[in-house]
Image (cartoon, rainbow, N blue to C red; front, side, top):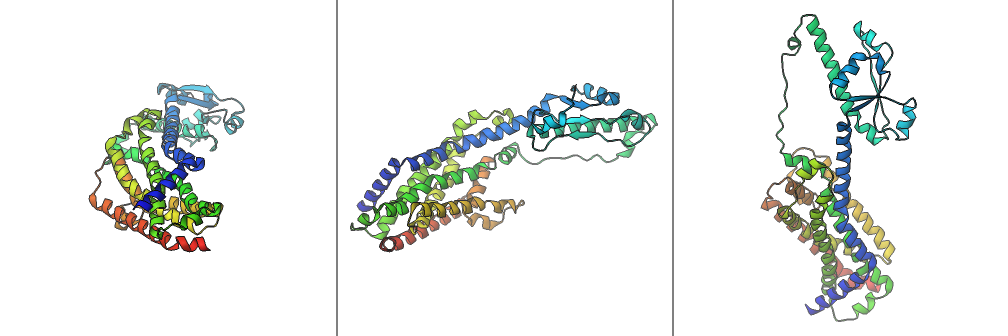
Length: 387
């Protein structure tokens, strides 16, 4: 036990002195969640600001006086679009879509002819694209009002054409919109764990082998299991530190949310933080063992870095299983690492209580992964040094 502690203390000291490892731990833990919440809130604010502008840029609006009157009655303002509106939309100088009214619009409409209105925007102009939906909804309302007035003038009650009224009743709770908006947060936390522990795992194996400091360590009377557990404990400690800092970063991150609706819905308290820690700490320990095992056979830091980056890519692709199953999650998802943690974190964000069975299953899987990684490292440690 004393040998394991000595190895652990030595590896932790090396990791704390390594600026690259320390920087990756801090950056992945402290910046991931704030950046995601800031970006999401900014996008939502842009969408809502377009709907609140109540401004319509139009070309040839004089050909449609009734449409102009309708738009003004809805509390919107109308401005003439500049002559070079297409070029300005492409260059993002205009942040609004442009309504194009054809010549003889009112005359043809009075004759009962079908006429078209065009909404011009550039798909690369994100702000202008956000304004398309409220403008289209406004024009749909105008079309519906014109149809109803036409029927009433002919003595036909509009209700006779729509005897069935279809209503929607949503069963989703308010918390579920929060999860939909912040669905990327669980995978962001998992990737922070992977990146935060990767350099420590590489440095303690391939890094020491490249520097030639692994051979003197082997000359001491320690077994492969003692080496494996000591090194794993150090890397797992750093990964768990990333988990702790990442979860704690949720609290100040809520101050960065600029969107009022998201700020009101996204309430992350100590209960949610405790649930996240219970879910992520075992995963951090098991991924550390896998990362050490992956880096062990590499002869250089660069080779180990490439292999661990491939491992990180594979881990980031695992949650795609959820995209292929939009209904009820099958039971075997609870046995898939990363997917199980992703699902449980989403349940926590919804405000649902975690069931004991998925937690036990996830813990068993993480323990199996840790033992498999440690067994491999313990068996291969001395053989790799002799190669």
